[in-house]
Each structure stands twice: as structure tokens, then as C-alpha cells.
Length: 82
Image (cartoon, rainbow, N blue to C red; front, side, top):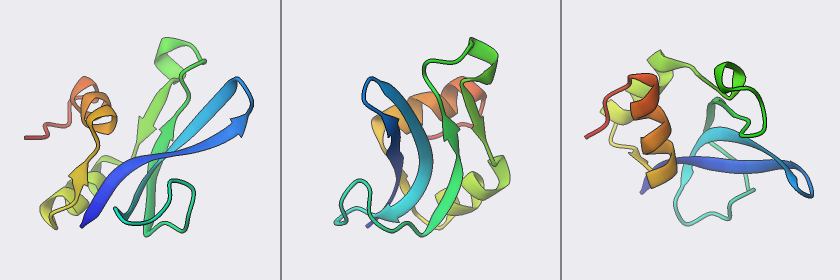
């Protein structure tokens, strides 16, 4: 199954995430199929989250399932996820 989830980057206590598409059986930081955006929780509210909406909608139409955190972020951005 293909999932849209977060890939952790950054140093200790300074997290930085990429929103990626990958096989659900792979490890969190392994090879990805596609990178869709970024999530930086320590930045100001307007700079925290950016995503390529067209790519997200394309992957969702192909059957990719978002993780709960990514689903919350996408809904907050205005991209409806069922």
C-alpha cells in the first residue's frame, strides 16, 4: 500500500519534515516515490507548511492513503481528504 507520510530530517530537537509518498512497508527514512512538500513545526505559522496541491490530489486519486498527521495538515491547508 502506498502512503503519504512524513520523513524526518533535521538535528536533535530541531525537527524538519518532508511530506513524501512511499510504500508503507518501508522504513521512515528510506527511499521515497515522490516528495510533495515540507512541514517545519518550529517556524512561524505562515511558513510552517507548504505542499504541491496538484501532486497531492494526483496521488490521492491513485489510491495513496495519508497518515493521520498528514491528513490533518492537508485539511488545515484546504485540501479535502476523506
